Length: 84
Image (cartoon, rainbow, N blue to C red; front, side):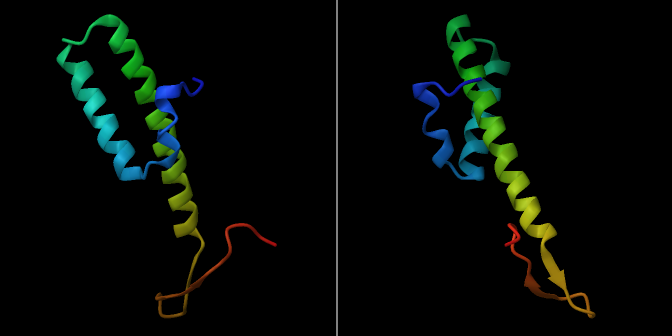
C-alpha cells in the first residue's frame, strides 16, 4: 500500500512509537464501533505501521547478527553491516 499523506509521519517513528500506534489501531478495530470508512483508513495505516516495524526489526536483527564474540563468548566488536 502506498503511503498516503496521513501516513507520511511513519518513516520518522521509532519501533516503539509505531508499535504503540499499531496496538491502538488493533484495539479500535477489535471493538468494532468504528465506522466502515474510518476502519479502512486505520487498517491501511496499520499495514504501513506493521511494514515499518518489520523493517526496523530486521535492521536490528542484522546488527545483532554482526556482533563478534571473543573466545570467552564476550562481545569484542562488530562487523560493518555494509562490506566496503
